[in-house]
Length: 306
Image 1: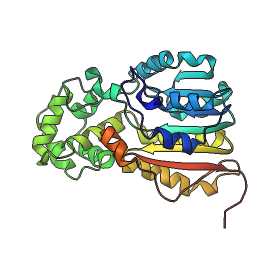
Image 2: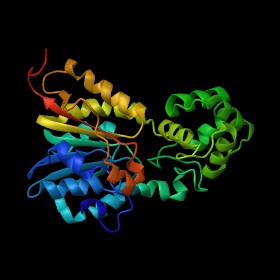
Image 3: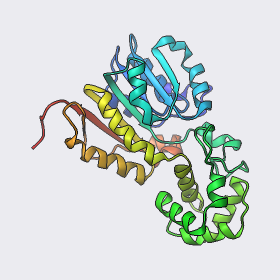
Image 4: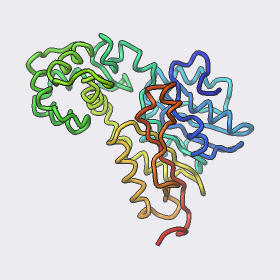
Protein backbone atom coordinates (compact mmCIF):
# COMPACT_ATOMS: atom_id res chain seq x y z
CA UNK A 1 0.00 0.00 0.00
CA UNK A 2 1.27 3.50 -0.81
CA UNK A 3 1.16 4.72 2.78
CA UNK A 4 3.52 1.97 3.94
CA UNK A 5 6.43 2.56 1.56
CA UNK A 6 9.64 1.11 3.03
CA UNK A 7 12.16 3.69 4.17
CA UNK A 8 9.60 6.39 4.85
CA UNK A 9 9.59 7.67 8.43
CA UNK A 10 6.18 9.29 8.25
CA UNK A 11 2.91 7.52 7.61
CA UNK A 12 0.66 9.94 5.72
CA UNK A 13 -2.81 10.54 7.11
CA UNK A 14 -6.02 9.51 5.31
CA UNK A 15 -4.36 8.75 1.98
CA UNK A 16 -7.45 7.32 0.30
CA UNK A 17 -9.60 10.19 1.58
CA UNK A 18 -7.07 12.66 0.14
CA UNK A 19 -7.07 10.93 -3.26
CA UNK A 20 -10.86 10.87 -3.28
CA UNK A 21 -11.13 14.47 -2.12
CA UNK A 22 -8.75 15.66 -4.83
CA UNK A 23 -10.55 13.43 -7.37
CA UNK A 24 -7.14 12.48 -8.75
CA UNK A 25 -7.27 11.51 -12.40
CA UNK A 26 -4.61 10.32 -14.89
CA UNK A 27 -3.01 13.30 -16.57
CA UNK A 28 -3.98 15.74 -13.81
CA UNK A 29 -1.82 18.45 -12.27
CA UNK A 30 -1.65 18.81 -8.49
CA UNK A 31 0.10 20.89 -5.84
CA UNK A 32 1.15 19.48 -2.46
CA UNK A 33 1.85 22.54 -0.32
CA UNK A 34 3.36 20.60 2.60
CA UNK A 35 5.46 17.76 1.21
CA UNK A 36 6.71 16.36 4.51
CA UNK A 37 8.08 12.94 3.59
CA UNK A 38 6.20 12.87 0.25
CA UNK A 39 3.74 10.18 1.33
CA UNK A 40 0.72 11.99 -0.08
CA UNK A 41 2.75 13.25 -3.05
CA UNK A 42 3.77 9.71 -3.99
CA UNK A 43 0.21 8.46 -3.77
CA UNK A 44 -1.06 11.37 -5.88
CA UNK A 45 1.53 10.86 -8.59
CA UNK A 46 0.87 7.12 -8.75
CA UNK A 47 -2.86 7.75 -9.14
CA UNK A 48 -2.28 10.51 -11.73
CA UNK A 49 -0.26 8.34 -14.09
CA UNK A 50 0.07 8.31 -17.00
CA UNK A 51 0.71 11.95 -17.67
CA UNK A 52 0.16 13.36 -14.18
CA UNK A 53 2.30 16.09 -12.64
CA UNK A 54 2.89 17.35 -9.11
CA UNK A 55 4.40 20.53 -7.70
CA UNK A 56 5.58 20.01 -4.12
CA UNK A 57 6.50 22.76 -1.67
CA UNK A 58 8.03 22.62 1.79
CA UNK A 59 9.58 25.22 4.07
CA UNK A 60 11.91 22.63 5.60
CA UNK A 61 15.12 22.24 3.53
CA UNK A 62 15.71 18.76 4.98
CA UNK A 63 12.26 17.69 3.81
CA UNK A 64 12.98 19.09 0.36
CA UNK A 65 16.21 17.09 0.05
CA UNK A 66 14.46 13.93 1.25
CA UNK A 67 11.54 14.40 -1.17
CA UNK A 68 13.76 15.16 -4.15
CA UNK A 69 15.36 11.77 -3.64
CA UNK A 70 12.10 9.94 -2.94
CA UNK A 71 10.27 11.44 -5.93
CA UNK A 72 13.22 11.08 -8.33
CA UNK A 73 11.70 7.95 -9.98
CA UNK A 74 8.89 10.16 -11.31
CA UNK A 75 11.37 12.30 -13.22
CA UNK A 76 10.14 15.64 -14.53
CA UNK A 77 6.58 14.82 -13.41
CA UNK A 78 7.59 15.85 -9.88
CA UNK A 79 8.80 19.40 -9.21
CA UNK A 80 10.07 19.94 -5.66
CA UNK A 81 10.73 23.43 -4.28
CA UNK A 82 12.04 24.84 -1.01
CA UNK A 83 9.29 27.39 -0.40
CA UNK A 84 6.65 28.35 2.11
CA UNK A 85 3.13 27.71 0.90
CA UNK A 86 2.25 31.41 0.99
CA UNK A 87 4.26 31.64 -2.25
CA UNK A 88 2.35 28.85 -3.99
CA UNK A 89 0.69 31.10 -6.57
CA UNK A 90 4.01 32.45 -7.86
CA UNK A 91 5.50 28.96 -7.84
CA UNK A 92 2.53 27.55 -9.74
CA UNK A 93 2.80 30.20 -12.45
CA UNK A 94 6.58 29.80 -12.72
CA UNK A 95 6.38 26.04 -13.24
CA UNK A 96 3.27 25.77 -15.41
CA UNK A 97 0.77 24.59 -12.79
CA UNK A 98 -2.02 27.06 -13.58
CA UNK A 99 -4.76 26.01 -13.82
CA UNK A 100 -4.32 23.04 -11.49
CA UNK A 101 -6.69 20.16 -10.75
CA UNK A 102 -6.10 20.01 -7.03
CA UNK A 103 -4.26 21.58 -4.09
CA UNK A 104 -3.45 19.80 -0.82
CA UNK A 105 -2.50 21.25 2.58
CA UNK A 106 -1.53 18.69 5.24
CA UNK A 107 -0.71 20.89 8.21
CA UNK A 108 0.83 18.27 10.49
CA UNK A 109 4.43 17.63 11.47
CA UNK A 110 6.18 14.65 9.96
CA UNK A 111 7.47 11.89 12.20
CA UNK A 112 10.97 12.61 10.87
CA UNK A 113 10.78 16.17 12.20
CA UNK A 114 9.54 14.99 15.58
CA UNK A 115 12.21 12.31 15.84
CA UNK A 116 15.08 14.68 14.92
CA UNK A 117 16.48 15.64 18.32
CA UNK A 118 18.32 18.67 16.98
CA UNK A 119 15.08 20.25 15.71
CA UNK A 120 13.52 20.57 19.19
CA UNK A 121 9.94 19.79 18.15
CA UNK A 122 9.47 16.93 20.61
CA UNK A 123 9.05 17.40 24.36
CA UNK A 124 10.35 13.87 24.85
CA UNK A 125 13.86 14.60 23.59
CA UNK A 126 16.73 16.71 25.00
CA UNK A 127 17.38 18.69 21.83
CA UNK A 128 17.81 22.47 21.61
CA UNK A 129 14.80 24.78 21.60
CA UNK A 130 14.66 25.40 17.86
CA UNK A 131 11.30 24.41 16.27
CA UNK A 132 11.97 26.14 12.93
CA UNK A 133 10.63 24.53 9.76
CA UNK A 134 13.02 26.67 7.72
CA UNK A 135 16.37 26.60 9.51
CA UNK A 136 17.55 29.64 7.57
CA UNK A 137 15.10 31.83 9.52
CA UNK A 138 16.35 33.67 12.62
CA UNK A 139 13.52 33.30 15.15
CA UNK A 140 13.68 30.18 17.33
CA UNK A 141 11.69 28.81 20.25
CA UNK A 142 14.68 29.61 22.48
CA UNK A 143 14.32 33.31 21.68
CA UNK A 144 10.64 33.25 22.64
CA UNK A 145 11.11 31.23 25.82
CA UNK A 146 14.16 33.07 27.12
CA UNK A 147 13.59 36.67 26.04
CA UNK A 148 9.86 37.39 25.95
CA UNK A 149 8.26 38.96 29.00
CA UNK A 150 6.04 36.86 31.24
CA UNK A 151 2.94 38.57 29.90
CA UNK A 152 4.01 38.15 26.26
CA UNK A 153 4.77 34.49 26.84
CA UNK A 154 1.43 33.89 28.58
CA UNK A 155 -0.47 35.61 25.77
CA UNK A 156 1.39 33.51 23.20
CA UNK A 157 0.56 30.25 24.99
CA UNK A 158 -3.08 31.21 25.33
CA UNK A 159 -3.49 32.51 21.77
CA UNK A 160 -1.74 29.76 19.84
CA UNK A 161 -1.96 26.86 22.28
CA UNK A 162 -5.34 27.62 23.84
CA UNK A 163 -3.62 26.79 27.12
CA UNK A 164 -5.96 27.64 30.05
CA UNK A 165 -3.05 27.68 32.51
CA UNK A 166 -0.90 29.92 30.36
CA UNK A 167 -0.11 32.49 33.06
CA UNK A 168 0.94 29.86 35.58
CA UNK A 169 3.21 28.21 33.02
CA UNK A 170 4.70 31.50 31.82
CA UNK A 171 5.49 32.50 35.40
CA UNK A 172 7.37 29.24 35.99
CA UNK A 173 9.24 29.47 32.70
CA UNK A 174 10.45 33.02 33.38
CA UNK A 175 11.50 32.07 36.94
CA UNK A 176 13.70 29.22 35.68
CA UNK A 177 15.40 30.85 32.71
CA UNK A 178 17.69 30.26 30.91
CA UNK A 179 16.10 27.16 29.42
CA UNK A 180 18.23 25.38 26.86
CA UNK A 181 16.52 22.12 25.85
CA UNK A 182 13.08 20.93 24.82
CA UNK A 183 13.02 18.31 27.54
CA UNK A 184 13.93 20.89 30.20
CA UNK A 185 11.06 23.10 29.08
CA UNK A 186 8.66 20.15 29.05
CA UNK A 187 9.58 19.27 32.63
CA UNK A 188 9.01 22.85 33.79
CA UNK A 189 5.62 22.98 32.09
CA UNK A 190 4.61 19.60 33.53
CA UNK A 191 5.41 20.67 37.09
CA UNK A 192 3.93 24.15 36.75
CA UNK A 193 0.70 23.20 35.00
CA UNK A 194 -0.54 20.77 37.62
CA UNK A 195 -1.89 18.52 34.87
CA UNK A 196 -1.76 14.81 35.39
CA UNK A 197 -0.07 12.88 32.63
CA UNK A 198 -2.88 11.32 30.60
CA UNK A 199 -3.42 10.61 26.90
CA UNK A 200 -1.64 13.83 26.03
CA UNK A 201 1.51 15.23 27.60
CA UNK A 202 1.00 18.34 29.81
CA UNK A 203 3.40 20.28 27.55
CA UNK A 204 1.51 19.53 24.31
CA UNK A 205 -0.28 22.91 24.10
CA UNK A 206 2.85 24.84 25.06
CA UNK A 207 4.95 23.20 22.35
CA UNK A 208 2.16 23.68 19.80
CA UNK A 209 1.98 27.38 20.63
CA UNK A 210 5.72 27.91 20.37
CA UNK A 211 5.97 26.03 17.07
CA UNK A 212 3.11 28.03 15.56
CA UNK A 213 4.60 31.32 16.72
CA UNK A 214 8.13 30.49 15.54
CA UNK A 215 6.91 29.57 12.06
CA UNK A 216 4.09 32.15 11.78
CA UNK A 217 1.86 29.28 10.71
CA UNK A 218 -1.54 31.00 10.79
CA UNK A 219 -0.11 34.12 9.16
CA UNK A 220 1.15 32.02 6.24
CA UNK A 221 -1.97 29.86 5.95
CA UNK A 222 -4.51 32.65 5.50
CA UNK A 223 -3.03 34.11 2.27
CA UNK A 224 -2.08 30.65 1.00
CA UNK A 225 -5.73 29.54 0.95
CA UNK A 226 -6.65 32.51 -1.23
CA UNK A 227 -3.77 31.76 -3.57
CA UNK A 228 -4.87 28.13 -3.83
CA UNK A 229 -8.33 29.26 -4.87
CA UNK A 230 -6.85 31.41 -7.64
CA UNK A 231 -4.78 28.63 -9.21
CA UNK A 232 -7.55 26.00 -9.24
CA UNK A 233 -9.05 25.21 -12.61
CA UNK A 234 -12.77 24.57 -13.25
CA UNK A 235 -14.03 21.93 -10.81
CA UNK A 236 -10.58 21.83 -9.18
CA UNK A 237 -10.41 20.55 -5.62
CA UNK A 238 -8.92 22.02 -2.45
CA UNK A 239 -8.18 19.50 0.33
CA UNK A 240 -6.98 20.55 3.78
CA UNK A 241 -5.98 18.47 6.80
CA UNK A 242 -5.81 20.40 10.08
CA UNK A 243 -4.81 19.01 13.46
CA UNK A 244 -6.09 21.60 15.88
CA UNK A 245 -8.99 23.98 16.11
CA UNK A 246 -7.18 27.23 15.26
CA UNK A 247 -6.14 25.98 11.81
CA UNK A 248 -9.47 24.29 11.19
CA UNK A 249 -11.41 27.40 12.23
CA UNK A 250 -9.35 29.55 9.84
CA UNK A 251 -10.01 27.10 6.98
CA UNK A 252 -13.72 26.88 7.77
CA UNK A 253 -14.01 30.67 7.89
CA UNK A 254 -12.22 30.98 4.55
CA UNK A 255 -14.59 28.50 2.91
CA UNK A 256 -17.66 30.15 4.43
CA UNK A 257 -16.57 33.51 3.06
CA UNK A 258 -15.51 32.17 -0.35
CA UNK A 259 -18.81 33.24 -1.93
CA UNK A 260 -17.44 36.80 -1.87
CA UNK A 261 -14.54 35.86 -4.13
CA UNK A 262 -14.69 36.54 -7.89
CA UNK A 263 -16.08 33.82 -10.14
CA UNK A 264 -13.40 31.22 -10.71
CA UNK A 265 -12.02 31.72 -7.20
CA UNK A 266 -14.88 30.21 -5.20
CA UNK A 267 -13.99 26.90 -3.55
CA UNK A 268 -17.20 25.62 -2.00
CA UNK A 269 -17.30 22.78 0.56
CA UNK A 270 -18.43 19.49 -0.95
CA UNK A 271 -19.78 18.24 2.39
CA UNK A 272 -21.10 19.92 5.53
CA UNK A 273 -18.99 17.92 7.96
CA UNK A 274 -15.27 17.38 8.33
CA UNK A 275 -13.88 13.96 7.49
CA UNK A 276 -12.18 12.12 10.34
CA UNK A 277 -9.78 9.17 10.19
CA UNK A 278 -11.32 5.76 10.65
CA UNK A 279 -10.88 3.96 13.99
CA UNK A 280 -8.65 1.47 12.16
CA UNK A 281 -6.35 4.24 10.97
CA UNK A 282 -6.17 5.81 14.44
CA UNK A 283 -5.18 2.43 15.88
CA UNK A 284 -2.52 2.05 13.20
CA UNK A 285 -1.28 5.66 13.36
CA UNK A 286 -2.03 7.43 16.64
CA UNK A 287 -0.87 10.78 15.27
CA UNK A 288 -3.87 10.81 12.93
CA UNK A 289 -6.39 10.96 15.78
CA UNK A 290 -6.89 14.75 15.70
CA UNK A 291 -6.91 15.12 11.89
CA UNK A 292 -9.79 17.03 10.30
CA UNK A 293 -10.05 16.85 6.53
CA UNK A 294 -12.11 19.31 4.48
CA UNK A 295 -12.79 19.26 0.75
CA UNK A 296 -13.92 22.15 -1.44
CA UNK A 297 -14.51 22.41 -5.18
CA UNK A 298 -13.84 25.45 -7.35
CA UNK A 299 -17.08 27.11 -8.40
CA UNK A 300 -17.04 28.88 -11.74
CA UNK A 301 -20.68 29.95 -11.85
CA UNK A 302 -23.49 30.90 -9.49
CA UNK A 303 -24.88 27.37 -9.39
CA UNK A 304 -26.01 26.40 -5.94
CA UNK A 305 -25.95 29.96 -4.57
CA UNK A 306 -29.08 31.64 -3.21
